[in-house]
Image (cartoon, rainbow, N blue to C red; front, side, top):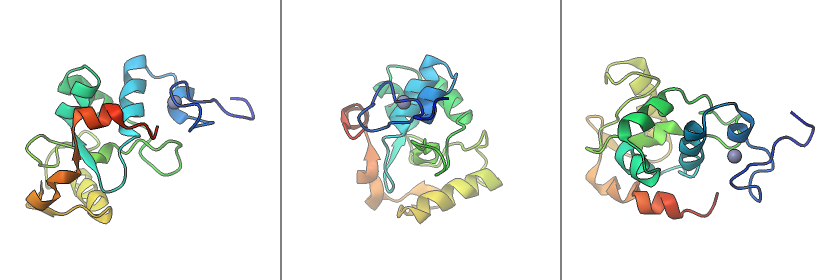
Length: 144
Ligand SMILES: [Zn+2]
């Protein structure tokens, strides 16, 4: 790593350093993480929409999410994989766990609630459904 860091290959005008581009991860994982990095606080998307935006399969995306090393504010950009939920608006997985009684899923719920989202019985409330980005929105976000 140089003193200037590694400029992002995809969004050099935004990220003068990019933890994703600096990594030795596969091209597919890098694409997944760059897309997730676009999801802002208070927004979520689903595995299915993410897969569509990446022209991939939900299962492949889920595998990449499980191995995400960048879900913390110390990374630039942060890859907030907790903002990816299931199609039926339940929480889905986190850190490889899917059991709603697990500490991992409780942590995911806590993170999303702290970002302003509301859940009932581990399911995103109906009134919050406009916070779910679809694949076109994920593809079109130009912020990154
Ligand atoms: Zn990058």
